[in-house]
Amino acid sequence: MNEQKTEFTAVDINDFFDSNEQPPSAEIDTGIVVFTEHQRQLVHTMRDMLAGENASQLEPLNKRIDDLKKLAIAIATFPSLLERADLTGGTRTPDSLIDSLINSNREGDTTLQLPSKATLGKGFLVAKLHTFSSLEKIARKANLEPSFTQKIHDETISMMFLLLAEDVYLNLIRDTSLTIENRRQLALALLLLWEHRADQNIYDISPVLQSVWNARRRLAPAFGTMMGTSELIMISFQLDEQWSQFIKTKLGEQGVNQAMEEFLFGISYEQITKLKLMLRERGIAAIGRDEVSTFLGTDIKTNVSEDYRDFFQQYSLRRDNARARKRLDLPGPHKTLEDYFISFVMEMNREKQEKDLHKHENFSENKAVIA
Image (cartoon, rainbow, N blue to C red; front, side):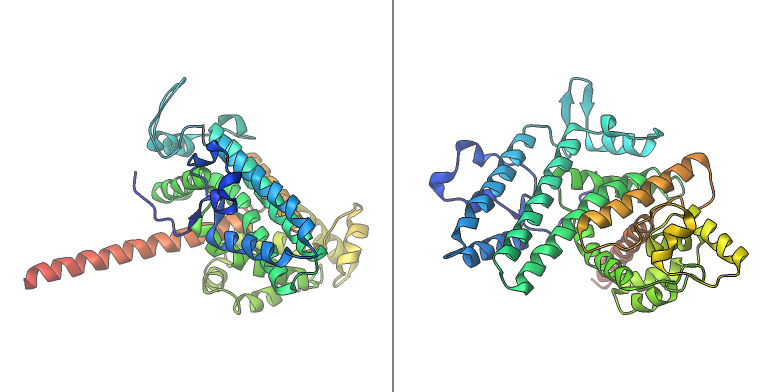
């Protein structure tokens, strides 16, 4: 199996405890990135800020971190996904696991088909996400500097995107329209995510998606004319280069365009289609967000907050709808906007790696000829 470089820095959980606080089991190498270097710095800074009159808040903070450590140690007892393992059902290797992911044609929830370490690690990530959410609440309650509290909030959002990435990888691995090379690359990325609960690709992508989400929250699209899409596109060109390139390259594709509409307006493709037809029949040019529920005859939440749970809930609804359309061969997007974007970024990264390798090979050949 080809090695993949991981640029994040793992931080030993023991750094958070005095030597007399560490139980013997703390020496176990979990393989999980319990905290990145940036996350460790945030926790240490917060401890310093809470010293003095807010010192009472340190106890729940320390307990949360201790609970994470214990959970990581427990998960460490399960076989690594990146090494050969002799299991009760037979021998498992990274390559055999990748092959099973690529060749699987199972529909529906595949939880029981996934490795135990993958399932347990997902629970760890949720617990870590909740931990940082609690840190943000403690920071706000203690009236810590707003800029610091925002850093805690942004880190929480990044963890949410790691949770989202697992779904995206699984979706794309099963997408037979992608090349087998891309699917194997995605499967390897998923194994690394399961093993370490960290992913440099997603750490790079998450600020972009967060910026797009914030832009989507600020827009007030006019349903019917679907005004707002053009505004988001204009904002897109002020964001990350990868995102603007994605918009330029992919938005003309029907599936991407439909997925973008679902993302932007917060309602399903089916509801968007129904709403457009109703407004056209009634001769109404456009309506506001607060009128959507009345026209569709059901309570629909089109306004969302900065809460990471809102983002993930909206994403999961779009994901489930896309999976259902694909399974039943119905019109509408068969992938989410996140699927399309992450796939695009992974493909761009792969092409860049191949070009860099080709340049290196040519340079080596020319050097050999000169010598």
